[in-house]
Length: 480
Ligand code: 2HG
Ligand code: ZN
Image (cartoon, rainbow, N blue to C red; front, side, top):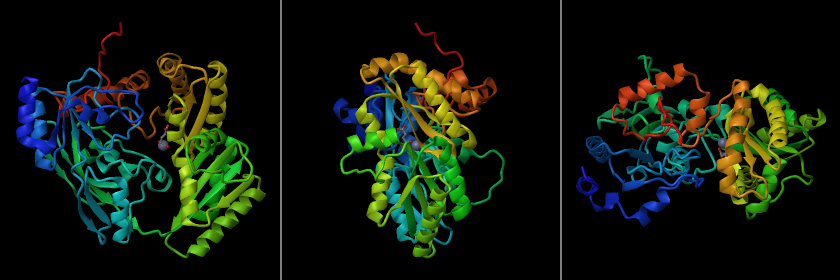
């Protein structure tokens, strides 16, 4: 099929509103959020219904055209954009943005893939329920993307990643057939779980078109606190002490080193330091429940005072209003953006056992900064999950892109080797996409990789679903 014929077929299936093929109109959607990859596409399909998605997939299968499912394009590993040499169809799920149903009694909600996360939050609240999953890109990330990447975010400590919040999915399979798995069953033990296989598959096995999400009771009381302390190792002791004092109300515990806070204060307008003095390490602590607001605040105050007395924290503050809580969250959520404004960084989304993380941060930072002179580690994030973003900023005088392609690659291999030695993972929450594929292949055992390739081959024998992401080729072409 020629490109011309392909565009004709897609145009017939989608109508003029559902198809974009002008380079300028496609451009914003062909470069990933981190601006690391600009992919090649013949067209961008904007289907408005499941049937239209099925038609696009059938046309792609007939013509052997790669199909790249895309949501809000907020991913961190270039999983939602084509490869540079592709001549792909980018299939945007954004027009499919209906909330199909909310069932407060069942505590579940069915949303289409293009619904934006903050819309899900709002809809759940209106039904006096809650969807307790959040991340910095909540105003543009879509449910389909979050499901397909098994996204993590800042509430994993209590609620787990997307995998534990999805009850069912609907997906178009690589031959155009429909997996009608939108159940809200809490228990379903019929062997292999196709839903879980598709969650986190990064669009390599099919296209998620809708999801049934688990809702929770509303928890209107939130107490957001910020604590400063001297040593990374205090962070875990502080978390464990607060857990012992406060119990399960703690749902977020985010580590913010002085370097991250300085980046945010430098680059993000309307931000200010939360404590009078600077501390080498800080934690943003979020507690929530549905009980008595004053009681929760009192309990958190008392727990923090106890932690200061035990010298696990040097100072702490509690947000006195929703606006102050939002301001504290902004300091944490804007780290990624502030780092991007500052220059390039070799980014590592790593996990090790929670108990090993403080020691890992200290020793790996010393090793990296000693070996690669001028680099500066910025390790922040989800300490309570054993997951930090161990980002290594280029030396101040480095040429960003050239550094990334040269020394940056060596830094990444070095960091990933340290992570592997701890039994950790090189992708805790961002997935593999294009950017981690080579390192994933290098560090992953053949049993796992072969099983993954066999699954891919069985479900997508034509290899049209988001090729070049997540599944390393068995025999990659030799690099010249
Ligand atoms: C976060 O936790 C995101 O803020 C982004 O996962 C992390 O930019 C990063 O490395
Ligand atoms: Zn993160």
